[in-house]
Image (cartoon, rainbow, N blue to C red; front, side, top):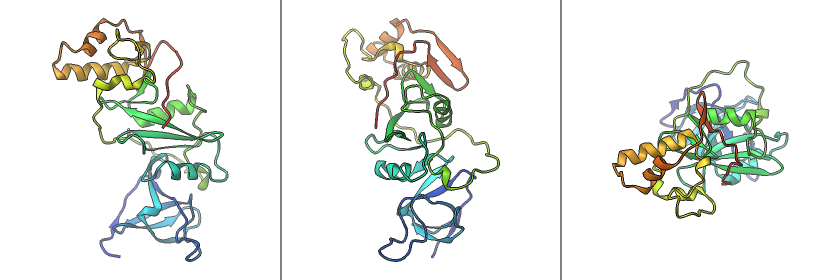
Length: 267
């Protein structure tokens, strides 16, 4: 196959097989759904790869795999395929992945196996912080994963292991990884009331209970409005007038001191 390109990847990066290849209707599969493959080279629409479980080496088309970074960030699969992988035999409760949202372009989803597979939308702020609940924001996706691996904090359960971890033995030592960098998307703050399921109260132009705003979220709103130069904006006026609760700062996550029930958005 022409235009071969060798690929250098992190120890935590791999290809996840989304469906048996070739199809059992054609011939016995070389790679089966849920197998983890180490990339050898990019063949232009095809991957040359080796199975981490069987050691078999072969080619597989790009449409049959998803690229996986950091062990849990899946690129190139939708909700249906995510559920299929998370429901494979021997998959533990709390197994998870992060993927691009199908229902909201530019956002991400956290998919978790519980009694059934649950999906939570991940929002990204203009200052590049992330959140599932606006009362708690994270500097990067890795920090978000680390937090919810320690405590459920409103999710269906604590995150236990990345999806497909059971497919191969865990590496002896995990290489440290830098914060994940993803494409920045424009967020329409003039429609910030969408963050609330049932926006009410004409006296609050933000349309959201201010006690649920984390430090990162308020900081991002204020920065955005300041850049627009619109001092008469009702949003900016509200931010100046509101008496926000003190926040507790801890490393790369910031959380409101008011621990009201967090509004999560299923995706």
